[in-house]
Length: 157
Image 1 (spheres, rainbow, N blue to C red):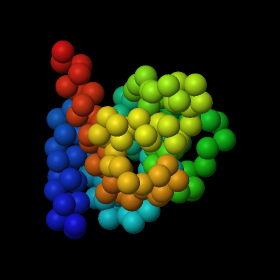
Image 2: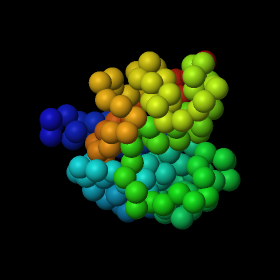
Image 3: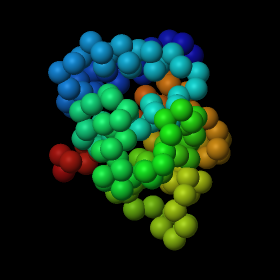
């Protein structure tokens, strides 16, 4: 499992630098990613930072990432970075950031449960969990890598 996380980390770093999601401050960013990959529990702050990068923000600063996603109407203004990141909250941020049309229930009701189910259907997230489960740092990196790779491929066509 540890080798798989290291491999995912390397693929993520290569993808991110190739795609240009990170700014020039590569040392701080690579340290952040390395530390994130070892976290057993990712925080909402980690999710906000990586989803904002996915959306085009170039900063690993939580305040800047939070402001960017609030401006894009992806997250609420009262979001706290210290909370744990769940599959549902991550899925909802990704769906809103990438403007993915969801299934019928997500379109009508919204929410983390249906966003998670949609991303499982699209194979960005693994099945067998629920929207309330916590996300580890390695899982967060793997999901963001899958989404950024898929979106990059779609932009070419």
